[in-house]
View 1 (cartoon, rainbow, N blue to C red):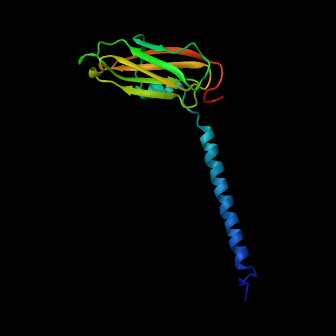
View 2 (view 1 turned 30 degrees about the vertical axis):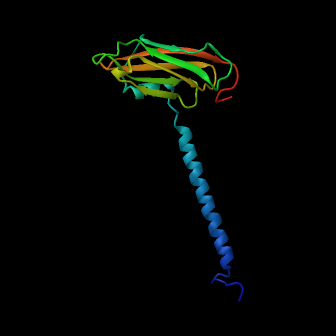
View 3 (view 1 turned 135 degrees about the horizontal axis):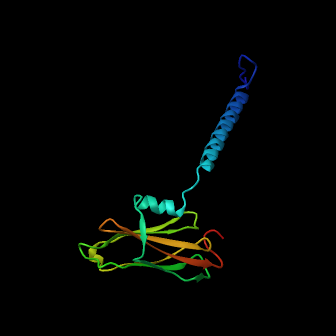
Length: 162
């Protein structure tokens, strides 16, 4: 006997194929539902990311200098330097510097932690910029205050978004 028939006259093979197709349809419907829910959520903007990083503290402008080229011919490697005016003593120092790019798909670029032993609060790196945009840095100080600085770069080609 090559084909085993069930009581309804359906072969075992047809039953298994039908069950597999049903499971695939259910999985596809579940994915479509989760994708729809994910699209309903608006991703946070750069300022919301910074706000979360500093625990909702209000930033004051000043003390933070963000340096980068005004025109970046290649968005894949844009030089960035952030310097914070601080004596870096045990009583008065920069605890953390957060950097975000407001036009990148993932806004958070880097968070660097400092101690008074660093001597100065300055970081230099290269970053990827998707397009012309602002780069914002927040510095959290040992006294709990938050300071900000900002620079803009015009990206002519390349970048992470095209």
